[in-house]
Length: 172
Image (cartoon, helix red, strand yellow):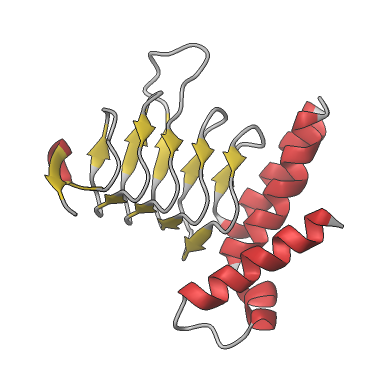
């Protein structure tokens, strides 16, 4: 039952954040950013219960239908808004906090250099702009905005805006 309540909360969040959506039913039926959350929440449940093949099968079905790839091991908080979504990749050891927004063609991935923890930890209330790449076992603080096409390879403190070339603009 909690599974359905959490998904309803996700759909309601998408409806509130996307000015193009008219109602929650439209979000549930038409939004690939919502559909991938359904696939991921099921796949992550299976992953946590060591049903790894089945978890990967569900996640790959989600990728096929939405164009969004989320490894079943990724930990995603509440009320994630994936806008447009196509081309998003979220790696196995990535974590995403609550109330985050991720735009199309973004990657929360690895660098290929790390063995165990390979993907970023994203705080609460983070916006990842279109085409942004957040790579490696780094930490992105709360209330961070990552600009379109930025590449982030280092830890980012709370309340910061990051733009191209790892330049950090401090904002209040």
